[in-house]
Length: 122
Image (cartoon, rainbow, N blue to C red; front, top):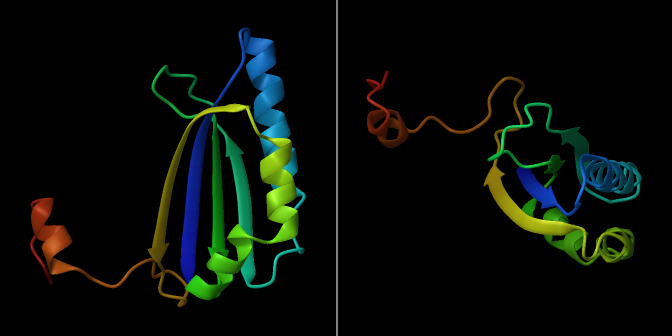
């Protein structure tokens, strides 16, 4: 399984304009639920911290495979959303990573990753 996470900062001269842009992003991506083959999960969150370094919107999706994620990139409904939102974002950040499909397991154990954070491997 592949987890695809995207975060955006959106345009807007006023707080109201930015709030409208954030809602448009959220509603647009939520409209993809059930339309994309291989997409297991779709969640859209709006930032509530309002700190100056935070992104405005986060999209978290999970796909059956890398092939399903690759197909999503060119799916007509995704392209429609992308076109609808053209010009709204000021920044975009993305992370795609493999996820163990077993409940409660997000990634394979990595002693190197733990060592980098000062943790002792099991």
